[in-house]
Image (tube, rainbow, N blue to C red; front, top):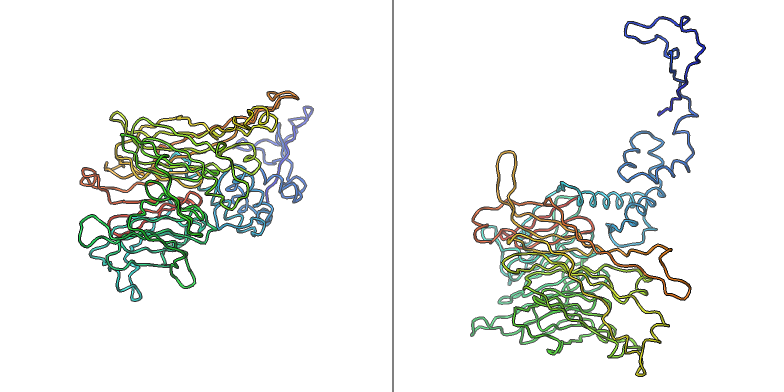
Length: 572
């Protein structure tokens, strides 16, 4: 039991000659007869353990999640209090939700979770954040499996077999959103797509579903749905090469698949054929698939297919292929190698809406960039319903890897949303035609930061929550040797709204300021993960790791390699 001891100064009138002589070690034999300071024996009334539960809960609310677990080990009283549901519900709100840290676990209502479930989520989220932001991040667990393990007696005999002597390389590895990082999609060779289940607490991989293309069918692209609630999980496109002309194709097909976990298979929902390629697949968001160049949109549920007008594409003498795309608040954001394009597509994204914006009110934007990019990622910072009513656009961060003047850099562009005008200003600013002043871009394009990188920088990836990785070659020094390695460098992209203090707002007749947006780009100095490579890989720039994916909610990385292996790295 923990006791509190109260010190008591001895009376200055005490006759020191009446005290017994000290011992040889200079201590008094009686602990209560010290000449200057004495201790009162602890009593239950002076103990922290005697405090009522509501006071203990108030104290625990100011303690971190790791300290709550440490307090649990000190006494039975703290063990009982720390198991209360209120403790972990409050800890999850204070240390995870209020700090804008994503909550791991399967989607669901937090009010229906037990105390143990809340504890697991709070501990996992905070420990991942601490490890990610630490000066020396560490991998907690690494697990590796072979994709050729998917070949069994029930495999499709028409598909190309994979053998351990000649494994097929892994060209794609993707996490399934909403699966807590436990479902991974892999593409091996040119014809095999497999869904694996890799539990967070286990060291085994299990096949959930597998599909193999028929003979002479080559997988040309794959995209996983970013909406975990959507029925369509996977968009797959393949081609049939022409038997007579080298490099030509006979036909192209695109299909939308759903995952039937009960029967262990992929089920085709909808499909479309064309004599041309459908690749590359840029992104699958809900019912819409963005694909090809010129960019096209396919509403797979209704079968609608739209191709953007060539007039929307600025003819550039520099390479100008599509790097990535994303839907943001009724607009389509297209990142090309030499420019950024923002197109209003309200009539496509909301075809059933009775009230459609007038054409003059839907304004896009175009931004030409110096240099030519070869990779890009987009991070949309989500807003609440109240914040969406205040701003015309969501804050967006764009990272591009650009080669400019012999230097390789990563440049960040910020799309700063414009505030929504109040009704009084909106009516007064329009002309006789009605509202011409509303025809403005919903955001401002601001190149804000440039970060130099090595020429070996590749595999630029980012998660939905703003955490990302790129891979570059570094020399790793240990106590015994120095060797080259492919290192994964972490970074963070986030945006926060800085509200002005009440004293700086306008008067009665003035609209108060909504504040300004602050964008942050933080690059971690130490590598998150390192894999040793040979000098032959460095010289040819053909590395063993071919593809990678990041699940930035649970802290899991998946790596695909040329030797037909997938490595799963857990940071928690």
